[in-house]
Image (cartoon, rainbow, N blue to C red; front, side, top):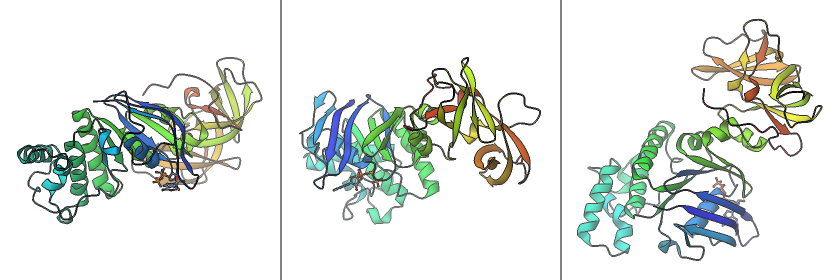
Length: 368
Ligand code: ATP
């Protein structure tokens, strides 16, 4: 088992693109770590640079404390699973799984035993004689994982491991992968552009934009307290409301911030009065008030409600600004209804209007 240390890492392609642009990261021993970001942010390049498939232009990569920055891929102790699985079509499952061992000239009997054991761990028993074309997408994905695990690398690198699976299989494979990683305890870095997948699987997530790190934290931290409006926009299955606002009172710990349609309570300590801010509030943390409200609140008129299954996303027009709020199923107010929205101050985030960085500092709210 091994940790990964990345210091001042930059990967510049020959055409001048700085795909990874000065990154510092520590992945702990045994951690399940996600590289998350929109297409083109450099996450695949970062993974490939850790693997040694792209040369680092600047900085260092250490695996298990050894500097591997200039070490060839085969000698870094990494096992990688590619997005398209890269299985050998002419080899059967058993041969595919044990190919890395064959390259290392491991004895046949050991290879056969490894194939059987790994196939068992990945629920591939009975498929060892089949060729990849005779397998489902989920089975092919597990063969690719089995091959990586059988190679006994110190770290496992996964490039969009679930993206080729259909929605249902993807959920099953996600659960399977999480359990497998727990059981093996192998340090794992995986790339995904799917925020829900990163939140569900990872111990920690690095959110990237344009080759740079925008936030590093646990799924709870990046969901509940995005460090900037980029992360706020990117994380969450319903988009966070980001509303222009002005700090109305900065007298005590909890003040208020005025936004179109009214105001919201907010922790305004360290934020000057009258500061122009962007107010972040997740639809899940807003509530449609049922009785009279005396404190800060937003007033508006329901425009539309969208069914999300056990919840509905209700869009409310607050003085021309659209605000999303989720409500439990079958409680959606109908379009045209006047509503009052409230939120706890601990869930209202204030961002610098210009830089988009989080302003108010407070601990991550604990799960309720
Ligand atoms: P995706 O999710 O679409 O795969 P990504 O976040 O993994 O995106 P990368 O594939 O790492 O992003 O690409 C980062 C940047 O580097 C992009 O601007 C891309 O166009 C560029 N890039 C990637 N590969 C090369 C290459 N071989 N030569 C030049 N530029 C490249």
